[in-house]
Amino acid sequence: MLNYIIRRTFMLIPVLIGMTLVVFFIIRAIPGDPAQIILGQQATKESIAQLTKDLGLDQPWYVQYFDYIKSLITGDLGESLRSHMSIADEIWPYLAATLELTIVAMLIAIVIGVNAGIISAWFQNSWFDYTAMVIALVGISIPVFWLGLMEQWFFSLNLGWLPSTGRDNVRDPVEAITHLYLIDTLLAGRFDQFMEVIRHLILPSIALATIPTAIIARITRSSMLEVMGADYIRTARSKGVKMFWVVYKHGLKNSIIPILTIIGLQTGLLLGGAILTETIFGWPGIGRYIYDAISFRDYPVIQSGILVVATIFILINFMIDLVYAAIDPRIKYN
Image 1 (cartoon, one colour):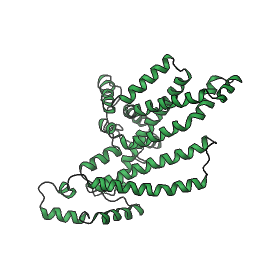
Image 2 (cartoon, helix red, strand yellow):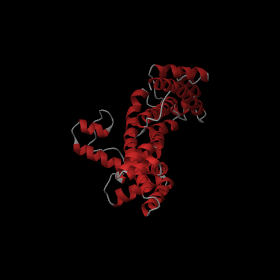
Image 3 (tube, rainbow, N blue to C red):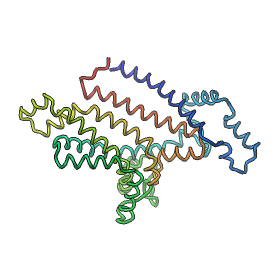
Image 4 (cartoon, one colour):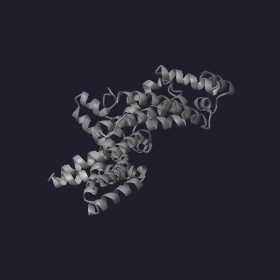
């Protein structure tokens, strides 16, 4: 197991290097001159040329790339061209917002999706099975932006139950310590603010969780159906084991590998693909941060933002691989 962890850790290095290369070249293919955008349309050619030189954009691509890699090795993500702040200091609040939203959305998706898939497999071809799978198909098909707008229209505008935008009450803001507001409110002992943060999380997390919930439900059902007819399931039932324990203890445990795989992939996708949800609900996450940087041609922010999201995605799947061995003893990492 230790040898496997070491090998996989070293395998991450070329993957990350490849990611930096891809991002580096794609970003520089975006039309527009960063110096021109920063200085505005009224800037002179001399000032644009000077800023281009100051930013190092007049250097050959390989010089710019290796300068970027050297900075990454030292933990320096660079400086934003727009705000002139260190990206390492600037990016965390945005990343924390997306992490909080993603974690809550995935918890909703896992609880609902896994249980819906299990019950559908348990009562195969029943009304619940057909209903759950139709709802899952609809959930995959509904555009997130439309669902978010409908949530705002119904629950915020019509009923007035939940806030439509933001992360907290702007009149009584959360004191940022970790920038994970659920944790910060508990650290401050403010239960009223904690409940306010939850109220702000409900609508965007449900919108974001819709597609993962549907996918997890369908994968869980398919995986459970494969094991429900196995010999050890029939043996457990013949011994008089209650159906609940047969399904959740024996069936789920032996069908969990593909479910874990899809959970890991969906978590990574939500981290980088929550920009629509963040835009609709005014959520200051990493997706909005990178999108604004693209509009401003802020190369260092785009490169660092995508690299951070890609690194988290890779680490999530790395941890899922390790969990495989802990759950299923049949898996051996030789």
